[in-house]
Image 1 (cartoon, rainbow, N blue to C red):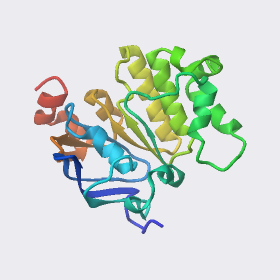
Image 2: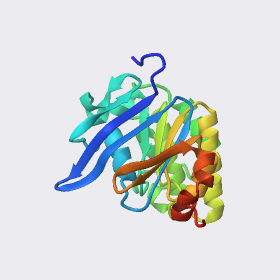
Image 3: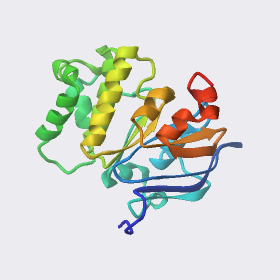
Length: 241
């Protein structure tokens, strides 16, 4: 159980290796309940590695990860979702031969057998296109629709903390705007969000706080508005000095 005053998620000094490659070099970050926190950085900086380590897909060589008072390093990866932590992965990774509704049902696999009607209704309210495509195979959807499906599938687990890995990747600008509107709506419904996103401008605009990661190390953290106006961040990630 979380101690009063403790953050919802606390990642402390995690060291992660791929063989001899030192991928994360002492990453430390915190997320408070109700926040949108974004993690920005260049390709290969360690953003997805950080999310995959939190969710248990990767194990750090050292460091600690506590989620609502639970030591995630003592929890089997398949059980993290039952604690209220869900991830929409980079590349979407939907099941192409399953229908939209079957893909959504897979998101609720860890929950006790129960009526999922309210969960489907929530997802279809957020993503009306998925309702129209509910009987289609996931592989026949457009890239934007597949991204909506990946996020919807993660929501079916009823997460308290939702981790989104590059939700706007490969999408047209109009769809990017729509996806971020929906992320804000999900947060307003009470879900805390950790966001990894190449589109740093848009990500910071909807976030409360942000962290900048470079070559496996957190080099800067601040509130989102301060990062948006930080000259070094603007030059490196926001397309202007």
